[in-house]
Image (cartoon, rainbow, N blue to C red; front, side, top):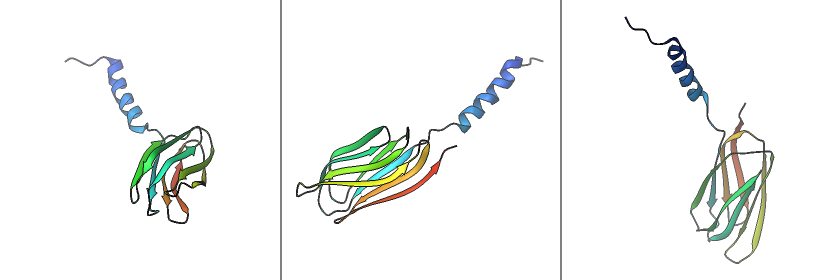
Length: 120
């Protein structure tokens, strides 16, 4: 009877355990434009980087996933249809945070909603 080499008996289960428990802590972000008009030059700053889009039409969403490196506050800037610049400050993120972030641009303000947990 052939027996597998000793190292293979232990290597395969160890490899499976490593892959089963590994994942990156990511934030799934959505910016919703509910202002009733298009916005331009949309940028969201988060610790260590930023994301954005040139144009976001009314009643549309922009999705982005990112990893938080470092800690700090969120900030969003955009230009409305009347060419007025706006800045809104959001919650503070800690390195390793993961979950959902929704930013909603309403006609009169910006709402920040988070469902986050800290990765250990």
